[in-house]
Length: 109
Image (cartoon, rainbow, N blue to C red):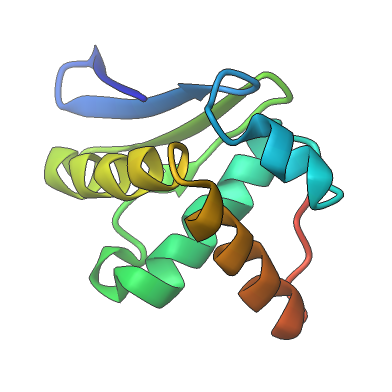
């Protein structure tokens, strides 16, 4: 995860897809660890663990990269902390995907 200032006052949170410690777990769960999958992870983390972040940034993923962007650097830092934790925790990823599937959430991967 890295947070950059893409223009004065504009920030982007980036994750290079396919580079996390949980990529194998994501594939075992039937998904592709691409930017679109990570957007779903971010949406779920916001809705379940940090609802105060809702609407404070936008998403613009690609196949090989997750990107969230906006003017609220603090919100992006908080999202980055949440995502970095799950990107290194296979059990957390398994629980999140299982809960998402139970709720009918579909990852766009």
